Length: 315
Ligand SMILES: [Zn+2]
Image 1: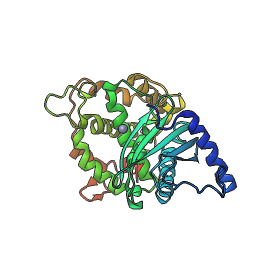
Image 2 (image 1 turned 60 degrees about the horizontal axis):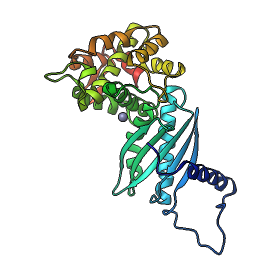
Image 3 (image 1 turned 90 degrees about the vertical axis):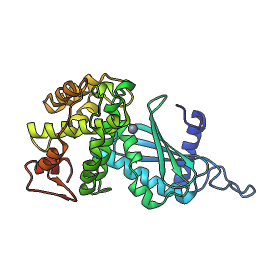
Image 4 (image 1 turned 45 degrees about the horizontal axis):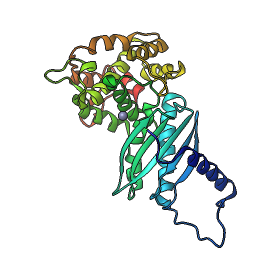
């Protein structure tokens, strides 16, 4: 989908933004003509993070203080994603921020074409605390690190984005490890098969798409670290997909994504799990998994058999 700003306009604004940053003065201002209120015009800022330049576009209607807060929020989110994947997944990305009534980060969408774009709806009264607590931006950025898949297999994209978002924010100190594991303990059950389930590839419900996919990610991550060494898991496997050219600009079959990820860690864990779960309702004994990992009610236990795996995933 196109952004609200036409391409030539966007380039013009981007250049102007750089010049303002260099000179400290607007390029086109003059004493006789009063400047427009800063809420009335689009503003573009360029952000450099490891591996990428982000073009942050503020649509008209977002005030100066909100833009300043939002720019820090985008930078923190992008750095968290870059740290998880070793670098930001794509070299050039537009982040389009659109104003909405009320407060809070309200919705996000990622587009691959015509050029990579993350579009977010932002309440005009969003507070710094709401920026700090937001997960939507990091979720959308995590989508950029995986090839596109057929819509009927969205569980892989949404599930991995859901799983990776929590880890990227956790590792960056934006949320505590305890909070991440407690949230997963509450929410992973939403991803379990219900009556009539026909496997991940054939059950496109909300729960199976987001949390069924996230549970697939967790089971794969734990499985990889149990089979090999606790310090190598899904993160390294997904970095291998990126290194092989598998990002949001390309479309790959699910099996190719998983085989490429497996190969990066010298295992077949993901492909085997997919073979088990793609066409069948597979129940996971989540209480047993939490006990093994040491995720108890309100605490993390280091005397659990897989505590080292849990700490390697997120501590
Ligand atoms: Zn998503």
